[in-house]
Length: 116
Image (cartoon, rainbow, N blue to C red; front, top):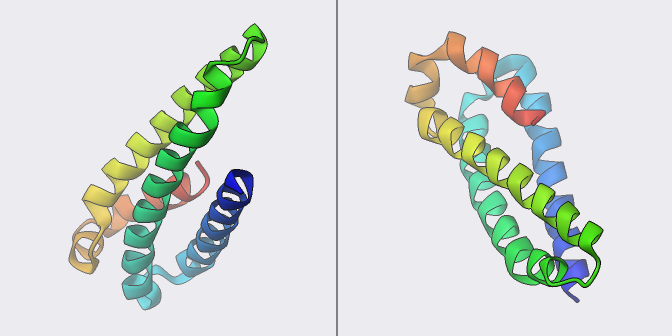
């Protein structure tokens, strides 16, 4: 049940990120949808990371296998960094006017965050 839920969340995030990549080919024409997807992604990422922390990493961190615990710690650090980067990106560009006011910066950061 838990793995199905995490897999479903991954699938939803990949689908949303794929859509965001395609929208990035014409930012000005897709700006409303891009802003919406930034906010949707932030919510989905937050829920997903909470689910992983509660149901996956808590189990892995308590494993008797040292290697499993190390891998879990690595992924926790990596996901935390991605979550921080996305939160900063969202704060800068979560609405149309923020994107338009910093369009050059957005065009540089958008592909980086989508591919993180």
